[in-house]
Image (tube, rainbow, N blue to C red; front, side, top):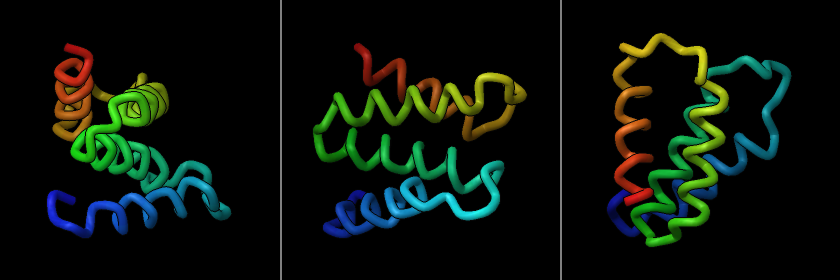
Length: 82
């Protein structure tokens, strides 16, 4: 994501979000929100990043608090708001 491939990575994640397929409970959907949030943050688009983090956190609001990716996402979101 940090390389020049960032926009390509964001487009691929957006494809998953735009076409979720037959399994709406797939872990790929919330993780795609997280990927979009991270790429947008790296590219400086704080509005898009915040929105994608909020979407991810809303989908995982009932997740176990000790899941590492959930903890990382919450910390990244808080840091983004500062």
